[in-house]
Length: 623
Image (tube, rainbow, N blue to C red):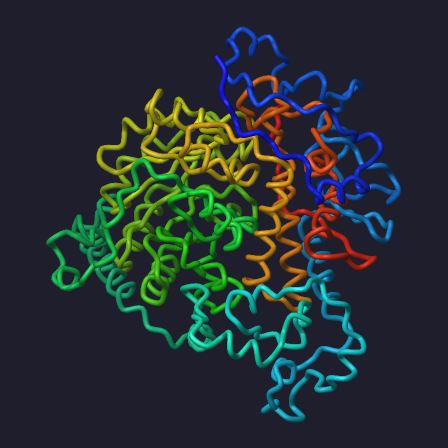
């Protein structure tokens, strides 16, 4: 059978501009038909090399293919080495402007990217008040410059003719510091700003709350109440650590606690999760601008990046920035991680009271050492009694739903999820999301969907969402309707590789999105990023950094029109190939220097000594 897919539009000026940036090996190939076979016989699939994407012969580069390595925090010795074609050679994780090797792991990557951000503000740093034409109230105490003429003499050229803040809000809070300041005309700005809403996002927690948290001036009456009940009943020997104090103290809707009965839970139990698409909470790359992109493609549920509960209680501004919710996010939650029921309870209480959230998610799936080695994330799966206290505490203190995200277990051959899932409902969870791998497996090997299906049978009333390796509408509806393995699916890396997967799921068709359309998507992300992080040098640097982080996943997309067999599988590595035009080839490159070229097409040139080291290893190809 065949399936009609949208035809790629390859004739654009952007593609021509990209051509000069592509290496000589990346040559264009002939256009393909809009009719693409999507249902090859299973025997034909099995006949192909396991773990290798089947690309049409006319797009393959006929040379010895090397396994695509995982992205590591390392750079090649030379900056003049030719760019490899997609699927070929080493994927340099750092773009080199200086030609120096940038070894090291995550701590070095973080320092390099921070130093890069610091370089964005080198030279005269103009006072924010002075930049918008106001008098600085700090006087001599101000550590910034008030020399407008000196600042303008050193300021780098504008990056474009229009400012997103002017376009959206009618005014720009960065004034002269804006890298698009040429678009500012004061009189017209003020006139345009009249009557225009300046609202950007919910949950803009102010400095006052953060300072009070740091000074420990915030009270947590619900958390204290729960702890008192738990401790008292534990001493009396009636506390069941599975059911909670009195069998119902964490229940929120039970009849054993008068104080709880008087409480109005107006935001609890209002969401029917079943059948909704869910964008997974994704550290770093699951930022607000990216979630806006996915909302544009039709995703139903979004969640913040993982926030560390202890950091929220310490009033860390960077952690509170993670809970911001764009007005387009109609079903939105905040994910918390921690290793203490008391800390998680207090964090859930303050988030519930200070923020607009529909649910609070407890992270018990994160496999990274920084979290798990401290007893949080997926390490919790070995401690069911501790989990029970955490979930009941959060459910007791929060006015919204409490959900949980777990893995199959800690070790790959010791599944425990099926034992926990029946208890989550008793503990008060409104939704359980199960990633079909253990902590030990991380993101390697295939997700265990048959086991997810078994766990769904163990769930009585609480909805169970599965997750792992889904990046096509065929896989999505196969798990939901054909195999009936879950009540919904959380999509993470699949959305990073192709965020339009939500559109494909809704329309039940393959979208052969063109390179020009994908470049337009990146431009939209940059616009969202400048609105979110700012249009000054620091904001532009942050926008570029997160754009590059996303491209470390996005480059893995194989255009539907060049695949011999659809759909693309998450764990299938491509052989060396070229796209249907230069831009398509460039966007499939695994070289960070090529990602930087794409960012320069959108955000202008980078400094000569600019470097980038991706935070995540996006690869999960079979070994």
